[in-house]
Image (cartoon, rainbow, N blue to C red):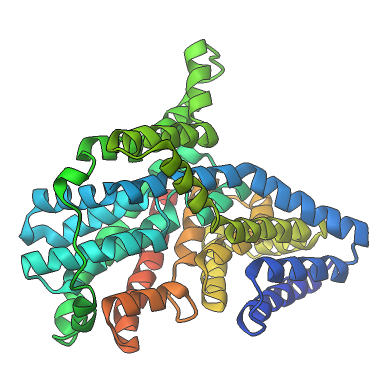
Length: 449
């Protein structure tokens, strides 16, 4: 297949996805399924192979990450229902003091965001932000924007969030390296897009920005201290899966050693096992010890899994889309062109993800579609590690904070902003996360990582 035809088919397939999602208003899963089938037929694949390719790609991706996402969601649900997020917020704010409140809110967002999706973390922490703002007399945007930025940073750069896990599987990256490199990238990105930008933009907004939302949240209040789990046990529960996965990844530096303790570390450091152990731990530390019954914990586990159905189907369809690109020969042709033109893989992944973000709004769709295109190219390319590609894809996927993203309207409504004010706050924050994140990836690549 010629390079021109491969590029044309890939562009048309992406346009079909965008058209079906944005104009026809189809579910992303169905849009990706239809586009994948049309792509296979247009590339000349027989009908039986088109179906088999989609099934194989979807099954491979879901087999690697479906259980990880489900287990991480259970852990996040226990953090929510137990009041663990409230405890973290209260403790960090008390330690930081009113003068460093924006920095404290950034830390809270990073910690809570490790275990919950952006939407859930936002719903949990925004009422706390309003309560803290009232108690300290600070403007609500000064308190809420840093935590919002931090939640978005973790969503784009850290496992076990869905988009990151999809890219991790597609690029065959090491999860331990993604975790520690993601942490290295996340902290400076969160500082710049959170406290620093907040201190720049809040004085330049009207004095009444966010005042209407403050009235709406007037009756929200955090739980009493006695009703909350301890800070230490909450933090231990949140960080447990991260520590286990890092320990499992560290065993690869031990060479061919196969001692029992090394095998044990590799076993518990597997993402599925590590998150399963952490979820079970949370049932005890944040559930049974706090007076929740087994029936209540079971109900919470079942409740949090329901909304995952659409997300997992969409991720599986993204894997099928990538398989169609690969099996049809389109990815190979694009890979050869990219290598011949010496396009840096980090820029390619970042640019494609940013374009998809603007087109469809969803960061998860942007990451999954981009990873399906870039993964085959990575085999032919050089100069970027799989882990940096995961982070660069995440950086592009959070760019711009466009108005076709549900997060834009969630932030606007919750913080009582106008559309122009949301563009100056949320959209700029998202763009800073993407641009500074790419810069950090390039810096790590220059350092040989």
